[in-house]
Image 1 (cartoon, rainbow, N blue to C red):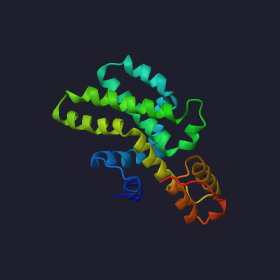
Image 2 (cartoon, helix red, strand yellow):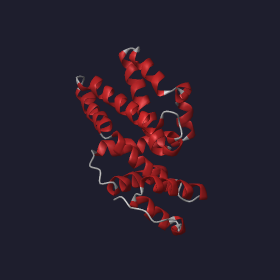
Image 3 (spheres, rainbow, N blue to C red):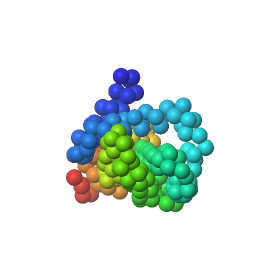
Image 4 (cartoon, rainbow, N blue to C red):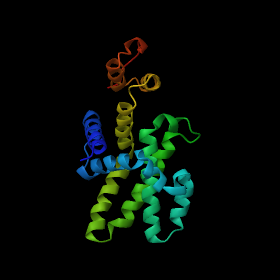
Length: 195
């Protein structure tokens, strides 16, 4: 196992445990593979011009596509929504549409993909179950990738500010622990903590 895969496998497993998320093993592996694919430069280059395509236009393209192309576009759309809203939540929060839009589009893409694959071959039916899980728990998986992102970028002063801003918005104990681990306790102010 490569160092990158090992790092993300451990990070994803830890985040799933921390968030007390029950999920199938295939979904956990899918998240790891997604992270590896998107963080590598060649993965971003391989995405081609569609990488900058807005999700709504991808959906429109999927609806008008032949079945094989529709499957490809829906998966790409779900993957892009999941990665961006999970790993780059702060950036997505600052867009005009916000994180709710990304979650809705990602859930819909994976849900439609699951439906397409459901009645097909035995292999496709098992893959359908994976995409159904990703659709049903999309928001929870965004949280998992958000935690992985926090751990990945936690060493810089910019990331401390990001952690502090997230703590201010959520009052989550997770962010208090992260700030304490980074010796940033002076940033914490009185306020209710959410479990």
